[in-house]
Length: 330
Image (cartoon, rainbow, N blue to C red; front, side, top):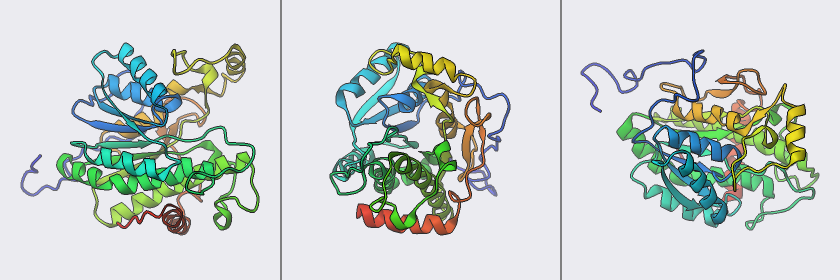
């Protein structure tokens, strides 16, 4: 697009607030011509994010660790949307070798309008485990792999932003960020480990990474925008059954019903990252989550002070570069 004389590309963007009251998940903005990469797209939030974006016309790249489950997810999406444009890329965010291979394939795409960094461990191991690269497994999967992936695919995002006015990265935070602290002096939890601390700490780190990345990109004049989203309290027991993708037991269904006053299905939890990926004019550094905190239509939310602390973000950045061996200079 060529800007009229006297107007910048930034000024051409319509400004529609994320708190607009009539956002309808069944009537998304047309995504035709856009390419969206979704990590962990074979199940849960990643699957429903991918399905909703594909139904809106996006070319969706499913970046998944398990090839069989990725095929099942693609099949399920095509049953819903026969015209869906899908591609599959192998990706294990806990394996930096796999991340590098996936990044190379993503960079070869004609365009990358959105990267949804969704993959992660939700149910952490009881005892501390390490990845193939020697990093604590939950941190490696939820944060470090995505840090490296974004760093290595940034050229594709920048290229698309230059051609299409904007490109985005959506990182997936969590309400768990409100319930724990971030131990920057023991990020790998070598001194003291619990599964809950590993999960919650990784999600605080994911949010802090997203906000720090946005600060650095804006400082450098980049047109790539970073939006952090959280899905509220989204559980399998309230999620529609999708063969090969989501098949909760009767026990989980019963537990879901008991929690329905304050929980929602993962199909609704996906609304936050979908809105973060598609909202026209949504600014970088926004935080999007359910209007009722744990459930409901997505709106602008308030992140924790730790997540947006520049000092925390800067230190986390240094540690992520150290643990991944991937420099992320902007």
